[in-house]
Length: 443
Image 1 (tube, helix red, strand yellow):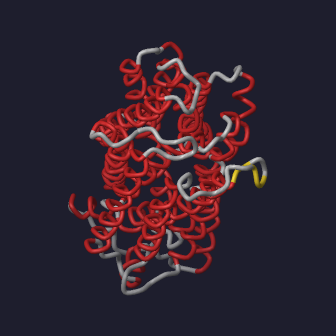
Image 2 (cartoon, helix red, strand yellow; image 1 turned 30 degrees about the vertical axis):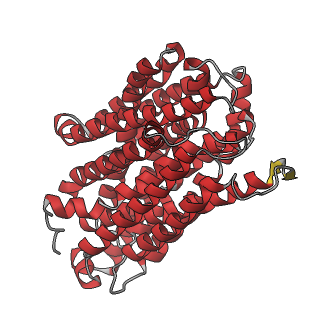
């Protein structure tokens, strides 16, 4: 049996390079969807329901992509064909979604309390998140396929770095375009040009980054993958190994999944309620059609960009942290720092001070992007169904977001409609998640 070879830094970088463009698309979605639907007329108590679709589509699509890509071998590779198809669909949808209010669709309620404009936006959101999920998952699978256990922390740190660098760019686009003189306000029910142009430029960068990865990564052939797989000496020992691995995989699913549940529920509330929280706390307005609300919408991008900066810094420190202490301790520390950031927003009324809170939140985000996949793929090293298991593992990301979205409106009602309190709840969730880290067994 051969071991997976060590890869140079640039080979590790190329595997995840396209993630930069995919994450720009994801950042534009996460920072602007609540703003878009509020502008289209959604009630704040309905906002969390619009966020059900993205994780629901992820939970459906990513396991399918995992199963199909495990069985795919063609001249273009194993995972890359899915990556490319997902990116092309995402680009098409990114050109449509921000124009939801500009197509002359009806503003009358037509179904489920939604207007024609909101229904178009909702369907566009569903397609966008589906395509982003199709494009995103292959990057994680390629690291699992091609990187040995010793280099996993470096590989996922590079992926985390590129992810957060892409987020930084995507979050800042509306703010930068407004600074350049592009209109940040629009007629009622129409998305401002600063947001529309952000999606256009993000789409162009996405396809260029994916083309770069497609041209510069050569996945291992079936013969190479077989040589790197674990070979068992007999059928009996093989069956025993499979039974043992199923127990191990079930255990790792449950233990990491419990942490993931609270972490991703926390960030679902951040994406959903930060716009309203910042508008009320720092601009003193809840009027979604006011200039102050739209300025707050731009500042959400700045705050999320600072969060991405914090994530980039923390991701660069992760390899050192894992050498100085255990992966579990580093994971727990990341979440606790993020919890402090969320809870501190309750007392912040200055938009610039608020950036410090989101800098701390970035530490939790970097940890969430790296540590679960380091732990999980190490447990799966050599398994030919890596993609299938990673696709199923994505349910530990999607399911908590769905649960959080379903109950978000009710929780908002319990805290008196104060959207900043949802960020405090997010902080509490991260504390609980950090305690669940102790249930994970690293070996």
